[in-house]
Image (cartoon, rainbow, N blue to C red; front, side, top):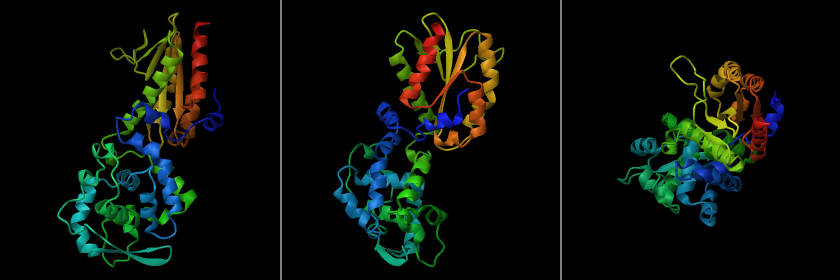
Length: 336
């Protein structure tokens, strides 16, 4: 049985760059993953005043204006539809100026496009799939939206604010606060919502499966690795048992591989834990083995479920390559 503390010590916890390399075209998420450290660094050094982030952004070549804005939108969980709706009511609230409080002082920002006819759509902001395919420098409409996302919730205006502004447009309060900012970004970063351009937690789960499958295929060229059902194993009389990956050795031995990478906590790991004992017992009766690749901060937040999986797993590893190598060594021993 794999020790949970040892497993966690060797885990990645957050989506690795390898995922982005494998599937760049599936969603915007890989591009955000690739640039999240640059984004955090930019906000960390932009602590002289609430406007200095603009100068820092314009001076950097590694982060475009539209990609920086997309980062803010994802973190605030405010998408194009919400921005278009807010654009209609903001003139009634701010009257051209965003007056706000930051670090104990009052500041004022004049919106440049608040009264313009164009709506703040993903297309106009260049944060849709097509727009993010190219680097677009910060322009007035992007700057307006960035300032709203950063400081809208800190406004001193004596009017009732939309909940999306008061609760979500607060990112500016973390400028320069390295530990707080990094923790916030890492924990919320790949919390997938409508804002990620259609990518879902299921898509990310499939990316993880794809990476593990390709890694096993590369290291075990003579083994068959696919999504086939295990022979002579069924969930019930009518339904074959479904697993993430099936590995078949040259001598005809089988190992099922279940994969779970959850950055935010959800019920997936609980479901797998609930099935772990019965699945292992069923597979063992047929002469098969079952292994688990478990990672992600969300999964390690559910210690009880992890302990159950480790107890009823023939081999448990994390998502790191050297951990996957341990899985490969275990699989090779099936033919000994």
